[in-house]
Length: 379
Length: 185
Image (cartoon, rainbow over all chains, first blue to last red; front, top):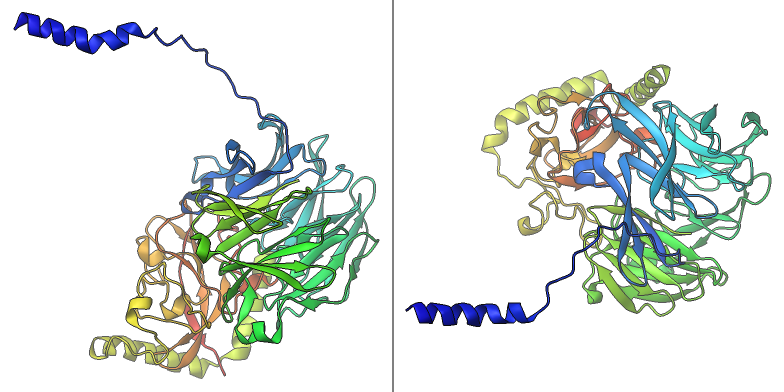
């Protein structure tokens, strides 16, 4: 019996004895790889436990999570014009889920994902769905604007370099901040007009002007999720009209609207829907929209198909159904701006799919990139 | 606070323009009478209700592919008629009820307003969607319905804003639906 045990012990230990032991390891800190056009910032609202939102930094080539930026409660976020900084406008409570409220803008260095500094705000920050327009930089990065709603609407003018709040500008019921040029901010009004406030060098109001209405908020409202174009933003309406607004001049200029839908499409009740319903590849003028079939009240229903349009001809050039790819309806969409663009689609099941934006070929599905990936931003 | 007053004044004026005291009293009487009759009535009173297997449960879609509404009589279901513009967690699944905040939370004094059709009596009702505040999100029975909901530039009709914003503890927990009165046709 003793011999049998010895033989068993030798037999089981021999392979271990034959291999050299693993070397000791050193704890290191990963550095972020260089930025690429296919890097995407995915805001997870973490709606089931909303005080713990975060931004996942994801690589559309390696399909790896590169890191995380914390985002607090019900945040907005944006990127600086040079893409080097992420700004998160958020709220913290002193005892986690309760206690004294602090509203703050946090600046993260996108080469390290470390928070570099912050600016404490008045407790007026607009707590709402994340859009491009919750906070945003002036074109020269000298000002940062933050939308306030108490529910009275106004916005804060911040100096990101000095870390100070300069001014609060009353917007008379018009909401959100659409920056243009070095010193203009437009807000969307209940009447379908745009209020544009021009600032002086100190960030004080120099003048303001109200545009004509560019959509009918009663008959066919636009999503507040504007889509960046070469000269401004395009706003999609619930019924599929495209309103392109040129923000390059002193006042916004409106191009003639056009429809995504043919009469046959309308008869089948196709319409855009979701949280971030469209993206534009600006160089090629391709517009990608999350489309579904539904009636009144379905404007937040995700797209069962992605439709692709040529912004010049206004023609649909492709439609990519998602069900054959075993993907849930699309709630948010974004496209990279390089010559080999990839399309990112966040589904209602919190998966993020990566497509070849030129062909519609599905390249990868990242399962469960957070709970509720509602806003996808890139440079 | 002036802005809150303004919002309430605006909502109240609009409500007053669309309803009368007589209709409200009548409605209250019907609600009280209806409450007493509920056990006697069949479960599915909705002429617009779809097949039961497609409507139960809080996470099912609220419309079919052609946009027809599906409603139920279950206040723990997203398809309950009164929830036609709720975007959030149902307080009835979080320790409260369709019109009562869960223990330990605080109702929001400001709110958004919807108009929902009750298939049981064929009337449209003005519904106040208050948020319940002061604890982190409930995470149960998420409901996202948006009939006549408008984007944030129409704040009194918008369900994306955190209506706990003016509370001392502005953390969002769940949403309730409170009948304000009958909407005049």
